[in-house]
Length: 258
Image (cartoon, rainbow, N blue to C red; front, side, top):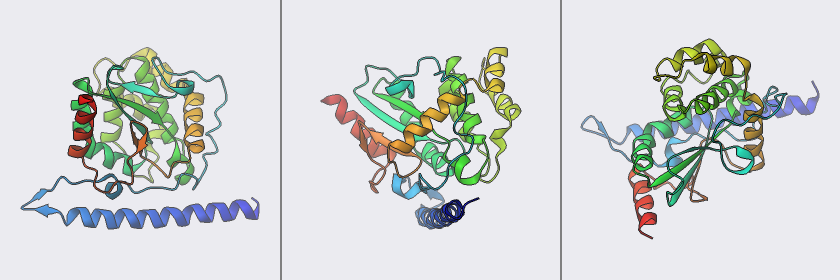
């Protein structure tokens, strides 16, 4: 390994250490909001998202070989977005996520109820982009394998439910449990009708691995600061420390009035 590569890896570890300290500080501030045993629901994106620098590490397996096979119904540039919600919705939330990313789970925990409410009502469309940032930073292939499995779920028309299951059962960041396809198939059992021979074959064959790699490359080229990256109608709302689920809902409702 060259000295340059060693220095790059040391820098990546140092950045991870700094960002984890930020996560701990953010968690202490959040706990301070507990009143009478109930958490005050003011989870601004900047408070809950412990960003891991986007260029902190690269996954040696990210350059997957084979043809790029986008999942059924993928949209956007190069077919890299998995849409949820009606195309007729006036507002679009673009979310870049990694299924191994703890900060992404924090975002999902806080914002999922209102996102489901708005997409089900036809007021919001969400475009999910899947990346493999943690595979590069922590080593492993769980981010990629989980993203491939989620794309397989999209083929089966079950992406939203399986997406939620993956975050609900997310292993600790240092545990590359999602590298095990058997675990991903086991979790598919929590989604009605998903665990089929076609889904299993898709997961085990890594059918969408090259598509996942291309999605991560787009993330790198996007000059984003980390995951999750959340854009509302094209505007990055990550750094808005006043952002809450209620505020997001208000923004969507106001856009629908226009």
